Image 1 (cartoon, rainbow, N blue to C red):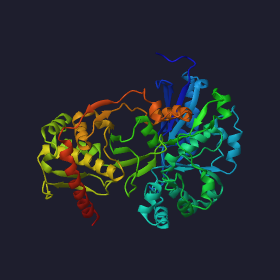
Image 2: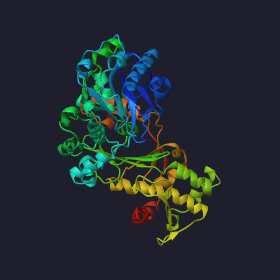
Image 3: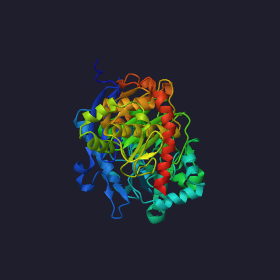
Image 4: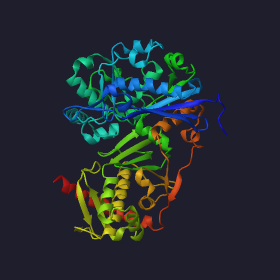
Length: 533
């Protein structure tokens, strides 16, 4: 049944690396409008490539903060032109590419409080940023600051125990420390530091929006247990940093009503609420509608694993974030460089460049591959930091080659054993009702998904996840205004389209892979030692 013409709507936005996207849903979770702005092609005056500027040193990567502001002007015009009735929007939330930072110039808060609805945002805010070129997640120029932070808190593992991750060059705390050291005047002229997510929320709020717990977990500054800034990390980064960051807030927080600027310029209702914005990865968890015990596996150029966990075990690998939809839970994130391109190389070498032949090899070989285990790192891997191809027989002896069929199964089993092993090291465990949600290009291959189901000993489902972060933000906007009444996020999104069951584990899978996983861990350690020596 179609929603009434005056029924409430909920708007989600995603400020990603290359574009700004919007999704509007009704109370029944049906998408009523989608739109987007491509930075490179639609805002060519900023001269970005892939939404960023790569600086001559090859390490520094930034995006123009005014490009994001101008993109919002353009997107809202597009939505209005497409017939979206802004007065029906009851709440708005959003996400931003994680680890990007925005530095507001002294006096910007007064400008935000007095926005003239006759002018566009980018005109009003053009002098509001002390740093015009925002560091983003691709930046890798703060290595010295990472070393200093880890030394100050007692080592990489101690930092991971506090903040959920060892020091990473793209993380905001290290970027702040670098900016303070290299651009002291701009830093001195800064009255507030936002993440891309809280910057975007600030635009809608008309005053500085809090950094939410979940996106704040990607800064090397937030204590993920206390959900407050770590004094130790703040002191190691910059003086009086807590004043520049403001107090972090729960990801489900309603921050306040939308700014009068949006009421008068676009016709938003004065009662439209701004729900805390978060990072794009946490927003994707919301869009996937993960539940406790679930794991999402994205099978793309890189493979990414999202896990909902209750008791995290921070480590030197991967990341632990506060969960964006459940204050008592956490999410773990792992990224693996050697994903679909590695599978494709084995397909080309062992299956005559045919996915059909590749799939047949998976069907025709036994679970466990006769005890053969392979590691395939065509490029140096993130987790673990190893490189090269390493094959072991059932007696853990290294071998140089296998038959094509064994090679095909070895690459797929090896990748999924690695995904499970490292997820478990961060606190994931298979429980009754565990689901594996598969997305990405390779999720269309049922034989690959069957191996995934067998290795994880859990049913595998697929999802149509176009704009998952953006859709997750629309869901979060709806949840934000209902959370005070006691409704959980799962209650709010229970009527969303269900994922499709595509594979269930073979009856012998648990017996085969429990032992194989232990061997895999031992062999991986051998590979890692060889790579590092």
